[in-house]
Image (cartoon, rainbow, N blue to C red):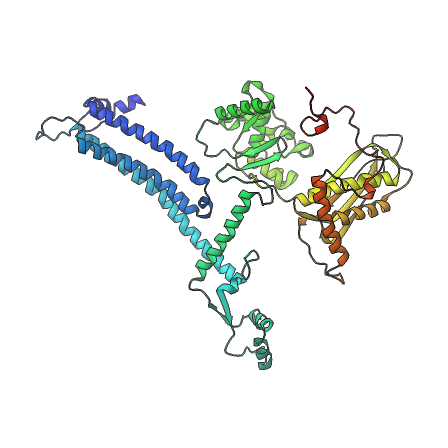
Length: 582
């Protein structure tokens, strides 16, 4: 790079080194300019990171992008102009008497350099502001389309109140519709229900009647204010923890998906530092703070990141961190040859068995296989893994986990149970645990499955598997209803003479926690249902505060079902009675 710059022509100077050597003042000015630009870039990065954590970065994204882009140009042009003005005002360059030659003096040369930098900064700024403006124009068109759809549907379900009729007023037609008699029309106009009927009325040709007049000067702006208010409320729910995940989301942070209790995915795109060095530092910090060794896999997709994590664990020479994207193509293919296809994330043992039938045994065989064969054998998920292995991201990071479809609460008993009351005690406690999870996620269940079975490992006795699923007409999240229902189903299942080894319940077809009316119920406001719903909430509150102090009668028994834990180590961090004594 130095040799290339030294050969660069600078006016009457043959090289840049000659230009810099022509004046000590020029060298000082260039040094000040370079240091100033470095400081500006550092400050700009801090400013950009700060602005991404602010609320208006999400409520006014175009203003945020414009501010981040324009601020860099403002700082740079300000620095260059200040340096130029300072030089001209204080005559920093000691120049000889002006000659009649066409040669440029050092001050004139430096002024040209400053002007060139200004032009480059302005060009850079304009090239980045134009996409912002075009994106804003496109978003405005999409907003207008959304407004028209909202107007056609007469409001969205998540509107705050009847927003549509706060902006528009329906005006009855002056000419009588041909499908209505004059008496019907005049009768409907007199009542609110009748006006609502006429507003939604369609003629035999499917044409609406009447028209709408504006109640505000600019309906589109009023709608945008309401939508902005709605998304501000959504933003506040995200940062306060009042959301589906229950976690407080921090603005400006990189998306993170907590995949399991000891594993997570983090988006590293756009980070301005060396990822390997940073992850090594992060790994040492986790080990120093918690004593837990961790490994980091870096890849362009989730499948590649999982594969890189496996390599980092397996080979100690990588010191716990491996970037699979840094491998050349030939080494990457050699790596795939050494990995069995069943070890790929998303394939598993059953998928590997299907692939082995068509001679796909290694990850490289999977990599070079025809995508049609993969989709036929493994479906859409296999196709996604195939694309991700080739570097095309198909599985996005889920910051908020998807809604659970079912909740399973089961346990292998500490001893084989033969008595009904012992089984009922076990399933009652397991049902309460499942209901606690159900209420924690603010969900309700529409099906309940109860299952019990004998030990399948005892060859001298046949394995008996008993289960029954019951559907509910309305979604339930109340333990005072689910626990008795579990006992009734168990009574239908129970067969004397068998020694049951394991049991549990499954709450399925989960939906959002709201009380839907039963269309087939004769009494919609059943006092019994209302009382049980109101009683279960205080019981759950007391049990959360006083460690399950309130119990159902069926929970009391000999506790033979409890798992044996004779070889369990002390729970120093979760049990007061097992704290380490010094």
